Image: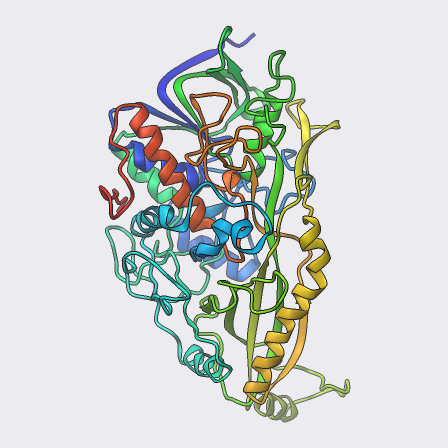
Length: 547
């Protein structure tokens, strides 16, 4: 039998995605020894990004090889990405903040659950995350887009197309501005400025877009963290007579299934494995004193999974546009996010992009007649006299308690553990309002089309819930939550859960920046516990950059 390896440290971070990177940044200024344990593999470095991009463009090839573990998925999962850097290795880099209303929907609207913190509590941590990652943005109207300090970098410039779409939205009474993004507009260190390669998702060839691998390269080079890839944590073990976590039991994955057992012992454990694998590990770690899993005295581990759905449309407009300059960048507005503009609870964001839908060359006309030679060009020229806009709105969904991750005893992972199953479910208030919510967003699209003398070409609704989180929701009452506002579990004083799993609701915008802000805030609390200052976010003691 292979001998078990034992690793000791002050802080053991489980997972290496974007939330883990934020916690590691906060701990880098302390004397703590930090070990990061990642189940997945290392990914290619910056010198290979341009070549990986070319293969993606030519062949549609995934630029991140070995970015998942065969057989280790979950029924209902949105992405099975599991690698050093996590899902944020191929995110689009969009970084909106939640709105103040998101943190108190019960108090304001009588739906959902209030967070144990407010927008103002999180504002300095939002700022620190923005400065650390290098967020480029412009502030919208302060009544729609409040913030304590300016963005760290100038906004990504609007293309000629987006300038025209901005005027179009304004004619409908909707103010819009450049979408904040984790993409440098001014070079920093080894990261170049954005030069509109337009493959932010899935790979940026210049390093303009932030991804967690940047943090890991910097912290490993300075020997502030020790990162162990290809190592899957399968259980957390309690101390024999208390409620503290004593060890994380893992396997180092080897070639041909030659796995080596590893035991991590630490003063503090930070679970940063995302909305699926964080809850999953807690449930898998059930034992005699905690038969329903660790940190689960409330019975809410894996519960209240949350996300949002989107309604999308393409609108034909009587204006000439030239799509293809920077199609991944967009305009955004929070005009419909702040307070509901209808009698029922409907809040949504709105984004606008240029689009080539209906404007590309074709070999048959609308009636199916074959086009040949000059007919192809004549048809193409005629159809480019008008332009197309893509518009999309994410609407807020109140999660049901049984929107949940559970263990499937009938299906096993390659490691012999019960496989996870994800079932997303709207709370009754959102379930009853679904049709009305989607019709409300469609109504906005109709008004936009009318304002521009255009027409809606088609609409669609995604059935899945995007930017998911929850499963270890935060709160002040141990009976109705899993962790406190810093991510410390109510049941185990030396165990934290950070990032996406801790959110109470998903707002109506990409939650990545919020996950990062929460992780930095949690990291500050962990740092104080191991003898560091922890900081108070930007506006307090400041933050440490990674460039």
